[in-house]
Image 1 (spheres, one colour):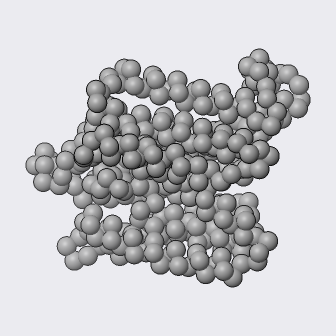
Image 2 (cartoon, one colour):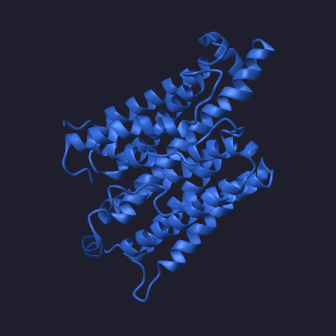
Length: 327
């Protein structure tokens, strides 16, 4: 497949993201035209229009875009860290840790800031636990880290099942929606924008290091890269990014797995292109999926994580069909 130049790909993905954001503002149970949208964004127009746009649709669209961008960025970093084409932001149990604590909070009848604090605290605790347990006598390796994360995630999954089995029936729907990904409760859509911008900036600064590390440990060391420090930085950074994404929208699969591969397929392995391209495409894809989640069978809202899986599965199969090796 012919590769696109960065000067073509990045503006195209930026335009795609803007179109998805515009569609998210325009479409819904009440449809508006562009003039009404612009007026509302400028603080003018009808009060009802301003309320719907500024307090409901815009925060949700921003939350979807930033969450998708964070997941795509985390997936890109995890694939470099583990040198595994199947690595995604949730592979080391970070999402499971967030889910256990979030479900426990919901089972106690709490919500709001308690839910956010519980999810973020659980994700952070599992990050530190996996990192500590994976550190063996000779330091830690990607294989040891991966195996430790998978085992911890399996145990946490069992704990989630117990919490669901013991929870009141009236709370099960909300718990299941959170587990499948839900942006309906995202009220502060822009809170993750600074983290996303900082993550992209740091990724671009260290893109050459990521390019070297993705080729293997020995070539990286031969070129003077401190592999241990680089791995620790990538692990902690990707874990923090994943924790914020999960706290915002619950568990949303396939974005972090598929999007980096799509960008590599059309642009090559250079992370100076892969990182911004993945963030833009991940944000656009989740924004579009969330638009479908709230409009396909309106007024019923679907879990956005289910739709990202339905979109992600054929995309990933397409990748497998296009080339034998996708990393």
